[in-house]
Length: 109
Length: 125
Image (cartoon, rainbow over all chains, first blue to last red; front, side):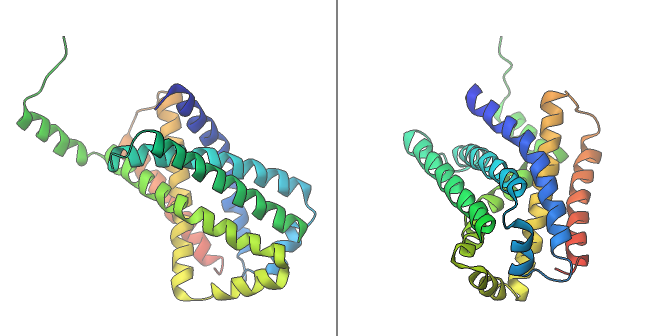
């Protein structure tokens, strides 16, 4: 792994350590007595702090996950080179796009 | 001068390393990461249904009310917790040079993840 990818992977890991802990706490709180769309949107609709938090979460995950997946694919399947790098960039863009869309969806809904 | 090992010795070293708690930790960290990477796009698509209104999101949530999906949700919560805990272990090793009591630390990470999973079940999921 190149130094840049290493720094990106570990830097986003530090961010995700905080955001995942908060997200797990939110899940445990939110599922009490069942999960409904009304409850979810009641917490998220128009909540700018929520939107900012999940935007950071999504972007960190969109950087972190493809770098980790790239390492696993290189070691376990032998897939290497430009095609792998481009696939991981596409996966990163997919995660960032879908994730930000989801955060905006529950913010606007 | 580079240290070299004969093939039988090398095979023995590999076999021995497979039994170490650090190997189990790395394997679980990777498998949980793979599960999360596969799940994330679906999770985002599900939440994105809110763009079509709360009713659409509610009807999607209704589809998840079965034993298989709930078991998968529990597994993913455990996977998220164990990936985070084992990731913190990696950061501690690399940034703080903490390499003590590997078996105890790895066991603690797994116990933390299952405790989170248990709390998820007890919360009424």
